[in-house]
Image (cartoon, rainbow, N blue to C red; front, side, top):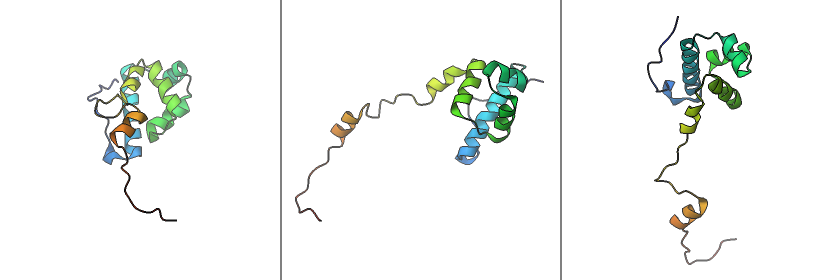
Length: 112
């Protein structure tokens, strides 16, 4: 019984944190089933208990380090490099940000 991953998009369920977590859990489960692995098999390969996997698949809640272990075990760790890519339209450093938005002094007295 294998499921195909139909989309790269995470179902957001209204954009809530819980919805995003559940969407990621659904994708992990789909990938696990695609590989033909039981929760126990993935747990052993990732060093995670099958109870943790069951809870994650049901609730979408998991520690980041545990999620990374699962991704490494399923050869999907490259996806973490795409989470927060550098953006050309944003300042690269705090110094650059300060140069772009220099505060202008206004005359007046300082209130106590």
